[in-house]
Amino acid sequence: MGSGGGKSEYRGRKTKIPRHIAIIMDGNGRWAQSRNLPRHAGHRAGVESVRVAVEECAKQGVEVLTLFAFSSENWNRPKKEVGLLFDLFMMALQRDVKRMKKNNVRLRIIGDRTAFPDKLQKRIHIAEEETANNTGLLLQIAANYGGRWDITQAARSVAEKVKSGELQPEDITEATLSAELSFAGLPEPDLFIRTGGEQRISNFILWQSAYSELYFTERLWPDFDAAEFDRALKEFSQRERRFGQTSEQIKEQQK
Image 1 (cartoon, one colour):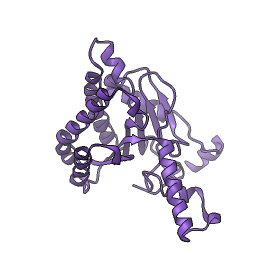
Image 2 (spheres, rainbow, N blue to C red; image 1 turned 120 degrees about the horizontal axis):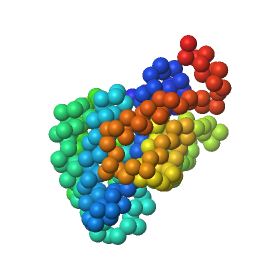
Image 3 (tube, rainbow, N blue to C red; image 1 turned 90 degrees about the horizontal axis):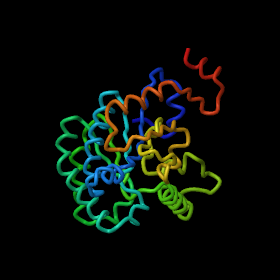
Image 4 (tube, rainbow, N blue to C red; image 1 turned 180 degrees about the horizontal axis):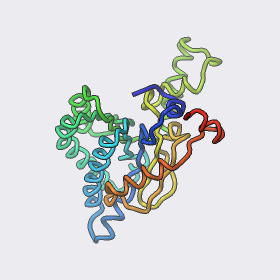
């Protein structure tokens, strides 16, 4: 998949297809409420949009798709809704693993899974194991994940290495911390999509999205179809990614 520092690797690419896309799937509850349906109906409808996103990424040659499914702040939602989300997660894992195996998709869950019910943790482990040898798209589901949590656990890991004498404080660099983050060793997200009309990143992949191109759409997640996905890719392809350089430098590198 490549190493960490995704921005430097992207510079030499001629294609405008992002290697890594991250999505905040927002608007499920509002989609349901606008149809006089319970909120969990929106979450169920959103599962189909996940399948569309996975299929489109695989078709376009995207290497990594990271979806924000359940944040560390989502525990503050009503207990019934949280429980239904867990049930839906279980059902999706059980139902879609065969589809992922057939389509060469590898599944990975990032986040603090220790807070999940034991049966869900077991199902996650099984799904990851059954798709571990797939070599196509890497589908990362961020569950009980928060960007600040990610940086904190990385800092704690680095501190332990300093404490043990494995690392000296003066040797700590950005690369040192990056290596301890949830998806170290993967390209950083090139394109960061948020549906539902909100224009903020809501504690998602804070460190890794430093150079991501942001794309906000009013479309609610259950309505995020292949056409909307194509619009996001088209806009991405029209942006110039400079990473602190000038336009002239980028053009020279692309010759």
